[in-house]
Length: 90
Image (tube, rainbow, N blue to C red; front, side, top):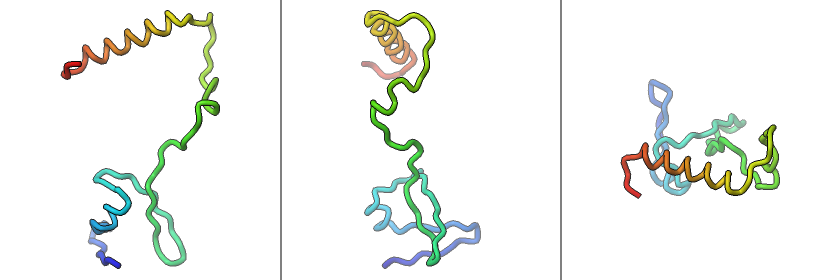
């Protein structure tokens, strides 16, 4: 069991062995849960996992259906725009 101290700013350093065990790196967001025995830290999960079936149809679109060719052209256009805005070479 490791020990740590509470700083004057209310900060706590999580021991490296615990960070490594949980694969937590700098910037990891944690949820703080108060319990009867103290505080529990859990990794924040900003978006709950979902399946394609759960998400299909959640975005509404009004208008004529797009053809596969139109969708592929839009994907190409977006990929080209990202490539052109990037410093990296593909």
